[in-house]
Image 1 (cartoon, rainbow, N blue to C red):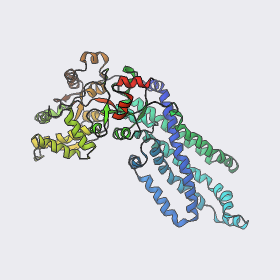
Image 2: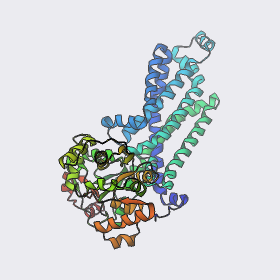
Image 3: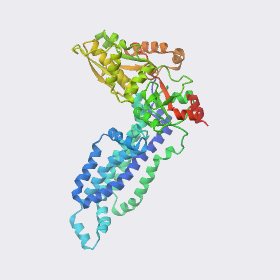
Length: 522
C-alpha cells in the first residue's frame, strides 16, 4: 500500500528553507519583470497619448502578447534567451505590458479638457503640463494598471520552474508529478497569498491623496528595484556544479531524495522540464542531469552516464500494463501486445529514441519502420470491434511504444485505437488508467515499485534489485491492489541515470555518482 502523506503543516515545516528560498525567487521574478514593464509601459502610454493614431497598433501588439499561451511564449523565447531567469522575466514583462500601457493611455486621455486648457492658459510648457497636471491626475488609473500587471505576473511566474528559473512553481509541478497534495498546496497557497497581499498594498497606494502619493512615488521604484534583487539572494551561495532535475525526480526516493540519503550528494539543483534539460547540459548551462539510460540524446549530445555504484536505481524494464476489465472484454489483446516481448533491447531503444529526439523523425514513422523490419506490421483492420485507448508519458519511449501498440492492435484485431500521448508524470498516467480514461500504457518496473507501490526498504532489500524479482513483485501487487495486469517485459531497461558531458566527466575524473559526491565535498 502507498505511504500516507504527512500533514500539510508538517510538510511546510520540513520544506521551510526551500519554501522561503523559492518564495524570494518568485518575488524577484515578479518585480524584475514589473520594473521593466513599468519603465516601458508608462513611456509607451505617454507616447501614444500624444500620438493617438498610433494607440490602436501599440495596444494591439501588446494585446497579442497577452493572448499567447504562457508555455508557448516561453517556448518561443528559449531558443533566443536560453533557460533560466532571462526568458522567464522576458515573458512576464510581455504579459505585464498591456494593462500598464492601456491604463496610462486611458488615464492621460481621460483628463477633463478644461483642465488642460487652464494649464496652457497659465503658460505651462508641454513638459510641465505632463509632469504637474496629467501624470498626477492620471496616477490612480496608472497604478490600477500596475496592480493588475502585478497580480498577473505572480500567477504566471509559477511557470518559471518549467525552464529552470525557480519560484513556487517548483512545488506545484513536483506535486502534480508525484500526486502530492501537500507539495501542490505548498506552492499554490503562498502564490495566492502573495498575489492578494500585493493587490491589497497597491490598492492602498492607489487611493492615497495626492501629497502622500507624490512621496510614495519617489520611494516606489526604489522599493520595486530592491524586491527585484530577491531573485539573486537565494543563489549567492553558489555551487561547484549545477544539476538540472525534473520535478518528479526531485521528489522520488529513487531520485534526488535517495541520492542525498545514499550518496550524501549535495549539489546545487534547478528544477527543469524533461525536454529542456538535455539541451541545457549540452549547451553548458547545466553540468549534471537526471536522464534516462536509453534516451537518444545521450548519444546525440555525447553524454557520459555516471555509474550507480551503490545501486540506488532499481531495474526499469518496460512492459505494457492494462486494466484486467479490458482483458476480460478483449481476451486476445494480451497476445497481440506481447508480440513486442523480447524484441527491443537497450541499444535498439536508444537508436529508436535517437531517430525521434535528434533526427526529428515522427514517433509514428519510427514505430512503423521498426515493426516492418521485424515482419510484424500489418495494415489496419476494420476497426469495428471496439475502441482501445493507448496512453503514454511525456517521454520518447512512450510515444514510440504507444504507436507500436496502435499498429499491432489495429493490424491483428478488428479494434480501433486512439492514442493519448504526453500525459505527463507517472501518477497522471496511472490515475488515467485506473479511472478508465485510457486502457493501457507502457510502464517501468522500477517506477511501479517505488513511485506507485512505495515499496518499503525491507521489500527492496529482499528483491535485491534483480529484474525478475522486481517484475514478479509489481505484477502480483498491481493485480491484488489495483486490478491491473503487467504483460511480458519488452526487453529494454530504461533506468534512471545521472549524466554529464563526456568531456567534463573526463576532465574532472568523475565516473560514478560516488565520484560526483566526493567532488562536491572538496
